[in-house]
Amino acid sequence: MSVGATPAAGDGKPLVRVQNLVKYFPLRGGILQRTVAEVKAVDDVTFDVRAGEVFGLVGESGCGKTTTGRLLLRLIEPTSGTVEFDGRDLTKMKSDELKKTRSDMQIVFQDPYASLNPRLPIGEIIGEGLSNMGVRDRHQREERVAAILDKVGLRRYYINRYPHEFSGGQRQRIGLARALVLEPKFVVADEPVSALDVSIQSQVLNLMADLKDELQLTYLFISHNLSVVEHISDRVGVMYLGKLVEMSSTEDLFKNPKHPYTKFLLSAIPKPDPRQHRQRLILSGDVPSPINPPTGCRFHTRCPIAQFPICSEQQPAFELKSTGHWAACHFAEQTKELEKESGFVAPAIEAVDEEAAAIGQAERSAASEPEDVLESELDEEARRRSSEPLGGE
Ligand SMILES: Nc1ncnc2c1ncn2[C@@H]1O[C@H](COP(=O)(O)OP(=O)(O)OP(=O)(O)O)[C@@H](O)[C@H]1O
Ligand code: SF4
Ligand SMILES: [Mg+2]
Image 1 (cartoon, rainbow, N blue to C red):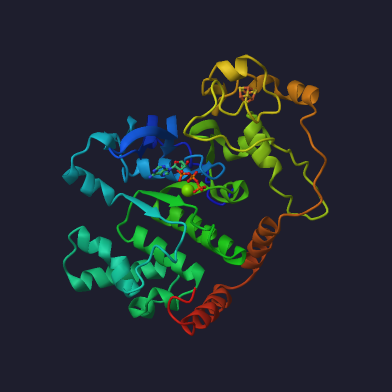
Image 2: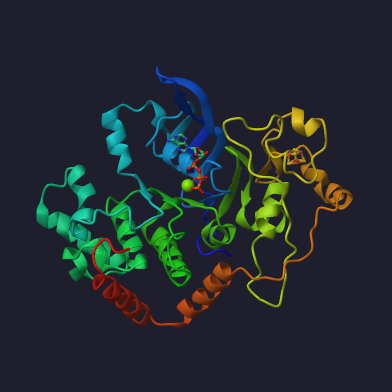
C-alpha cells in the first residue's frame, strides 16, 4: 500500500469537483497585440478529488499539470468549465467569498528556494497568511507559527532565521508550514520534492503523508515522476497534452494500465533491485505542440498501436472501462493483441535510474534511523549553506 493510502481514503465524498475544465492561453502578436493563436494547456478535463485522499496528477513536461492545479485554486481563470470546492462553485465566487474559501485551499511550490522571500525571517513568512486572514494579535500569530513548526519537524527557535540559513529539505518544510498554518482542507502540492536531493525526497514525502493523516488533509499531488506519485497517492490521473487519458486507483493503474501512454510511463520506472530489468517501451516522435494538437486522439502521432483512420479522426471519450478505472482509448480492451501485432516492446534496458534507486535507499535508511540523526544531518547542510554568501546558489 502506498504511504498515503488508508482504508477510508478514496471512499470519501468529492471535496473538489472538476467538470469540463478548459484553459486556453492566448498568444498575442502584431502591433495591435491581437490573439494570433492559443495554447490549449488544459482541454476538457473532468475528475473529482475525494475528501481525505491523495490524488496524483502525472504526465510529461508541458502536459498541463501546473495549469490544472492553479485552476483548482482559481489562481487563474478558466476559459470554461467549473470547479466546485466543498459543494460551492469556485468559478462563480465573488472576491469576498473567494478570499474566505482560499484559507481552506493552499499550494506548495516546487522550488523552495524561489518561493520564500529571502528578506523575511521565516516566522514572518509563515505568519503572513495569518495576518492576511485577519489574525491581528501578534502573540496569537507567533503561537500558531511555533505550533506548525513543531508539526513540520523544525525547531521553534528557527523562527527568527532567514531562508538562506536552511537546507533544501528544511525550506520545503517551511513551505509546508506556510501552507498548513491556515489549517486548510485541501493542498495542491506542485512537484514538492522535485527540486530536492534524492536523499531528502522520501523524508519530505513521509512528512507530507503523516501531516495528511494528522491534519485530515486532501492533496492534489503533481509530479512528472510516476514512482514518486505511487509512493504517496491513493488515485492517479495521467495527463497527455492537456487531456486526462487515464484515471484509477494507484494499485489498479500500476497492475492493469489501459492506456498505451500510461504503459510507456510505467515502463520508464526502474525496478528498485538493480538485478531486475523492466522492459522499457520507446515512444517515437516529440510531444506535439499544444497550440495545434493532433486531431482525433492526441496521442496518435506517437502511439505504437494507433489504428487508422479511426485514431487520427475520432477523439476517444474518457470513459469508465472497469470499476473505478477510466481511460480515453478506442482500443483499451484490445491493447495486448495490438501490442503483439505491432512489436510494441523494445529490448530491456540495462541501466538503473539512479534517482529512483536512491529514493528506495533513502526510504530504507529513513525507516531505520532515529529522527534526531536525520535532523542533525539537515542542520549540517544548513550550517554549510549559512556559511555561503547570499545569492551564491
Ligand atoms: N501563462 C501562460 N501563457 C502561455 N502559455 C502558458 C502559460 N502557462 C503555461 N503555458 C503553457 O501551457 C502548457 C502547460 O503548461 P503547464 O505549466 O501547466 O505544464 P506542466 O505539466 O506543469 O509542465 P512541467 O512538468 O514542465 O511543470 C505549456 O505548453 C505551457 O507552455
Ligand atoms: S485511441 Fe488510438 S492512438 Fe489513441 S491511445 Fe488508443 S490506440 Fe493509441
Ligand atoms: Mg508544472
